[in-house]
Amino acid sequence: MTKHCFLTARPLAAALVLLLALPLTGVQAQLARPSAGAPRLVVPAAPAGNAASGAGAQRQADFIVVVVNSEPITNNEVRIKLMRTEQLLKQQGTALPPRSELLPQLLERMISDKAQLQAARSTGMKIDDNAVEGAIQMVARQNQITVDELRRRLKADGIDYAQFRSEIRDELLIGRLRQREVDSRTNVTELEIDEYLRSQDGKPGAAATAPAALNLAEILVAVPENATPDQVASLQAKAQQVLERARSGADFAALATEVSASASRSNGGQMGLRSTDRYPPLFVEATQSLRAGGLAGPVRSPAGFHILKVIEKRQGGLPDAVVTQTHARHILLRLTPQLTEAAAVEKLAGFKKRILAGQADFAALARENSQDASAKEGGDLGWVPSGAFVPEFEKVMNALAPKQISDPLVSRFGVHLVEVLERREAPVSARDQREMVRGMLREKKQNEAYVRWAEDIRGRAYVEFREQPQ
Image 1 (tube, rainbow, N blue to C red):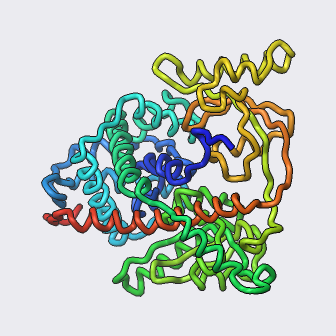
Image 2 (image 1 turned 30 degrees about the horizontal axis):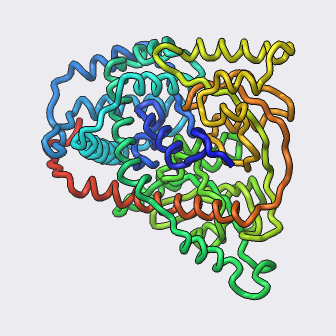
């Protein structure tokens, strides 16, 4: 099957959303280590008078709190970031942790980010203005507002737009370095796939007794290594509060994006379909009696408190496993300085109107206009299983009935018009199984490599603490 530019390359898709995890996304998005996915960003509507408080924080006499290599982090920088974080937590109805707990975590996150940004700049990498504008448009789309409305809310929140734009550029730059240093260097060999498959069915009768394959989603409330009993109790209460929100119907993926300190937060908390022996035993034990959709936790580990959700349960590596496949086609228009998002949406809406009126053929329009490799095939994407496309594309595609055409949809690659042709249940072929295993092993390796990389960047930085933030 032809590979297409917007097919899921999960680490890349994950990186893009992570890059936008700016000061508008909530306390854990601020404090957790960044990971290599499609979460939702939340732009708060500022309370009356907030801009004045932000300006007041900037007017206060400043001093250096910490130096990272040769660059300072100032008290005002810490205060402004703390103010944004606490404001957003209040708006979300989340209990504020004591500042004695929040400040050290916030400062450590700022140090880690500063060190990674310095490493990215030292490579000579640059982010062009079009990439920055595209990222800002994505922030606005994820919050279902226009860029003008985003500007207004930032101003009301006391955030200078030029500063916001600079932060976007910095995050994109760090993400590009992560891709180069971590994702692009992670390979899975055929031997590793063979060994995994043998572990599933390497002995007689294994097909009937193979361990169940699980796809779990998690939210991690991290506990520092030397946490006091009071800190542990406070974080456990926070985890319990998150669990109750999930049980009350809150979207788990959104909660993971907002709260989780785990690398999986970039994929809505999902850790991927894998055999039980690839999960921590305590995760398997906590979820063994649950069906798909069930919640468990908080589960304590050395890392902290985990809230778990069962996404899928099935026998791993079985030849009779089936998956839902979709046969679709699309027209993709890429955004450029000459083709704005609004213009692309209008153009594709016109295509849809002509197709439905019988005045044009979808395949012909795709061949003439689509800007990806499927154009020569009339936009045909072939038969693909669930999870093959980036989330924003797949969500719309999955909601379509056969022979139905979507409205224009915006993804990180541009604007699409999608038509679902057919759906079917199909056995998982040996080749598909190998590709599923490859993806699972690659994700596991990338997560492990990212943790080592981030710790190495932080460990090599010269960090001099000057004064306590006030």
